[in-house]
Length: 313
Ligand SMILES: Nc1ncnc2c1ncn2[C@@H]1O[C@H](COP(=O)(O)OP(=O)(O)OP(=O)(O)O)[C@@H](O)[C@H]1O
Ligand SMILES: O=P(O)(O)OC[C@@]1(O)O[C@H](CO)[C@@H](O)[C@@H]1O
Image 1 (cartoon, rainbow, N blue to C red):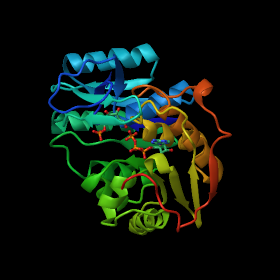
Image 2 (tube, rainbow, N blue to C red; image 1 turned 45 degrees about the vertical axis):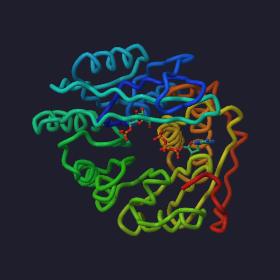
Image 3 (cartoon, helix red, strand yellow; image 1 turned 45 degrees about the horizontal axis):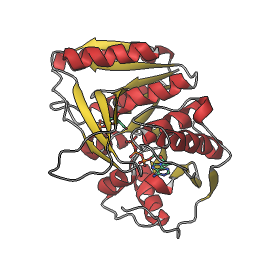
Image 4 (cartoon, protein in one colour; image 1 turned 180 degrees about the horizontal axis):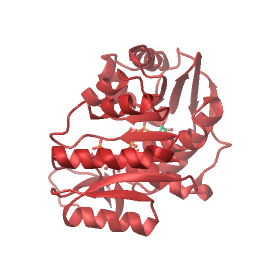
């Protein structure tokens, strides 16, 4: 069983437009509303693929109630924690070529009492968990070492912790020896100060995170695929996407696929890439179901550090 924690969930509104022109009135072709936030998406992807999970979700205000009703409609197993501030709304402008422009609200502050209640919910859900996944940004006022505290709490209890966040919260968590971190290219670069233009740069940055405490690093590299550093092995993989619709949530689908496949080695990386590339072909932050996921187009090999990355860094 996999417990996910999303301290800063969102209502994700995706607006499909022809092209983005600053300062213009843009008529949208379509709009979708999805429940959002990184841990929420991991749970949605797991549910869509019949893997048991429990999402811990603080919610507040009308937006929070809408979020909870969308998650209930999907059948997500969750522990919801009512909080005073309203849940945020995040907006994605999606263009036909797959380019997305995302505007994420900061979210509203959680009080110390609310944070304690959320932590208790995670502890109670985690009694039967193999993994606890702590994902996404922190709302204002939440201590930057909150994910680090989770790592400390669970490493003693034999429960694996996976972290997908950025900035100081990522650095603090890495120092508490999480089983897994899933940075994207920008997060790798920010955490290490390295500019990442080749696979070798990404590997060097991931090695730094391992030296600081992370056991396994699964680094997603956007259209360039992903690299996995685990034990003494380094695997690289990618998969084509015929028609990219929206990359939002692709990293979450990747993490879900990796954990669903046992979180070890080449086979788990293939699964992670199959789920991620399927997500890129779906609108908004829709998570892929078994019918969307194709494994035979994913290529995973031993990593060649001299490989140049195509997409911008
Ligand atoms: N344009 C693309 N073409 C093909 N695959 C892509 C593309 N963008 C993303 N992917 C796939 O999705 C994975 C995750 O993408 P990315 O590195 O952008 O994650 P992320 O920044 O964590 O995303 P998010 O935070 O929205 O979940 C990549 O490793 C890759 O497999
Ligand atoms: O602001 P954060 O917490 O970093 O990211 C939030 C978010 O962009 O991440 C998900 C995609 O990964 C979306 O559902 C959501 O809007």
